[in-house]
Length: 153
Image (cartoon, rainbow, N blue to C red; front, top):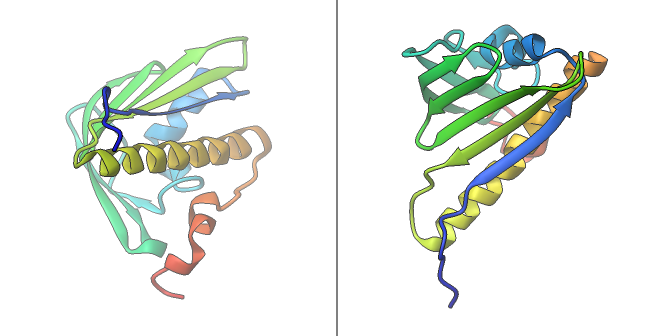
């Protein structure tokens, strides 16, 4: 049986062809984030604040402890694991977004599954963000990922 020499991390990255201020705000402001990720939030992301995110179609929620917010540069949260967003401006209207998720717990199989699921999930989130900001299209990617899991089917 294989053993883990390094604890896996989840990483998803995407170039978004919009200015860094607009891309950063999409993750801070739930009025925007609810168009491509969760369905409800108790508030904006601000350093030292706790918020709740809900995915109403799945009957799921997450308590989010906002550790750091560096405007237009970085967001760091805890929600059972640690998630960090890094926003790197490129050309005039381009932002490279990196999302890194660490701190998975359990046995080796659990940790690997969590890292794979997280990488997949954050990739879907970034694709939804790209469609929304670049083309003003709401793709419903998160809701459509597991339609048979919806609570009110």
